[in-house]
Every structure is written in structure tokens, then in C-alpha cells.
Image 1 (tube, rainbow, N blue to C red):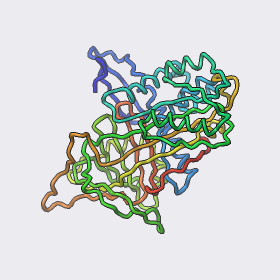
Image 2: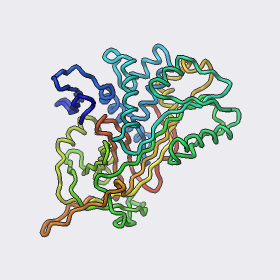
Image 3: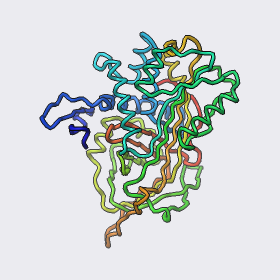
Image 4: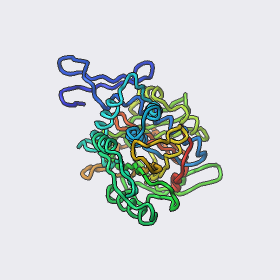
Length: 406
């Protein structure tokens, strides 16, 4: 993959830690790629947050966009000072003796550009907007730095009238995401005078699209006593597959036409939380090394539209991060994460559903995601964790809620 004149190489070392390196045509290994510097810390933070949310919501769906959350929290560090700022950045996994604060923000600036503005990405809408009461005044340094690195939009509103403020925020979010995300829940009695809305919507085009005519309503076994009906997509094709005896799960890897890649992970019955607890960079590395190209897989996976809303304020406060006087001298801050992911049959508009004819005499490998499973969505150029999902009941989805700190 080319970036300017550099050839970018990304691989996993034997220790499971990510080694990121850029080599130009003359063999100069000193070239750095800002967003790649963030990858190890961002992925570690992603799995740490995901695991804690799973533990705090037993038997429930969990759906987050770690890269979007990391970006928002790194940006908020510009509104903190001293030990609070250090604690926040270290909580995101950054060692400030090895990576300067400026380099962290430059990395996120470049990462956002690659994910959102590159022509090679999928349909991804991602950003942050700060709504503040019109009685407040934002500090100039915070406004300048967040606009420079994160393209933060700051909009004044009237939080004395919660109904008007909620309508303004919801309408703004709907417009920014082309109607994909709307109706952001805000408590009518919220005392916040500063609300940061962190949002992301993603819909990719499959490299091997599913045939809509093959989608059928099927049973999904939530648990021993609950069965629900879901639209089940299916395709028979060549794809990367692994039966992992270590973690007692099966997984397939599907690619988007862009830089996106998805792992669908089907644990054995009752073992989903065990698999989630084992997720790490080293686990991903082992999977990537072990995946094989299977010539005939019958894949059945639910068609999903996932949406979630999380209040990240408790995560910050429980970590002792409550002083955001670098944003404004007054006002309590509320941080809301809103994510949406669309998984349907479609590839590119010009692409036809693909498949392979069954081999005479060969038995196809059938994988049916009809019980709780895991979805990991990555951008494989930046190796950002776009989404981490625990699907328990596809007909319910995650409920809006706050969670304990990681």
C-alpha cells in the first residue's frame, strides 16, 4: 500500500506488540507515519474498554467505536491541565516519555483525515461537536487547538430550555450524518452546560456482496429459553476461516472494497465472554497467522443495523478526570458517544453478488451465526478498531446507559 513515496509495512512481532515501520525507496527507515504511531495504544485501549463494558452489562449487547472514543478523549485532554491531562492521556495508553503530547494530537489529526477524507474509505461519518450554553465563554487556546487538530465544531445553545437544546442537538446530528443518526437521548434535567457529542456512522460495501434474494427469516437462539426471528444473510464463497481450538470459537474474515475488514467470531455455546476476555493484539496476531483460505464456506449471518448511545462522563469522573477548566471557567461537561453500523447484503453499486458453485463430492463448511457472537471491524490501513460488538439479541441492541471506568 503506497503513501506518498513510502511503502508502509505493518506486522505483529513475536511478542505480540505492533511494530510499525516506513521505508522509502532509498531505504531510509526514519520516516514516521503519524497515525500508525497511535495504533498499539488505541487497540489496547479498545479491548480494555470493550471488556469492561461487557462485564458491566452481562447478557446484553455491547456496541462501541473505540477509535471514535479515543479521538474524543484525546481531544478533551486539551481542555485539562497538569496531572489531570497526564492521567487522561496515560489512561488512553500513551507513554508521554516516549510520545509527546503534540505528536499524539498530530497522529489523531492525520488518523481522522485518513479515515474520513480519504477516497479509499467506506461510507464513514465521524466527528465531534461541542454544544455550550450561550452564557459561557470557551477559552481561546482550547478553541484554537481543537479546531486545528480535531476540526471541532463548537455551537452555542440555550441549556436553560432543555427541550429547545435537545431539538437543536438532534437536528444537528441528523444533518451531519445524513439522517443516519438521530434522536440522541438527553435527560431533560441534565445539569450540564457543556455537551460533547462524539458520533460515528459506518456502512461499507462488501468485496463479496451477499445476494438479497438469499436472505431468509431464521431463528436466533439468544439463550436456553429465548428465540427470536432475524433476517439471515447467506453466501457460499471462498473466504478466510479459522476453527480456533484454543478459544473454542470459529471465525471468518470478510473484506470491504475499501480498507475495512470484519471478523465474525462464533464462540461455542456459553463461551462468548471467555473469548472476549482473551481478545488482545496477540490474539489477533495469532488469528491472522492461522487463518486459511477455505474454498467453500456457507456463511449465514444476521442482517443488522446497530446503534448505541453511551454517556462517557462516568468513565472520566471515576478515573478522577473531572476538571475541564481548560475548556471554560464554568460549566459541567457531559460526553455522549453515539455510534451506528449498517451490515446488509450490499457491495458496490456495480458489483453483483458472488459465490462459487459447490464442488461435486465435497461437503461445504457451514457456519451459522444463530447464537450470540462477536463482530470486530477494523480499518486495516491504520489498523484502527472502528467497532467492537457483542451481539446477544439482534432484535434489541444496546440500551443507552453509562458505565464504570476502565
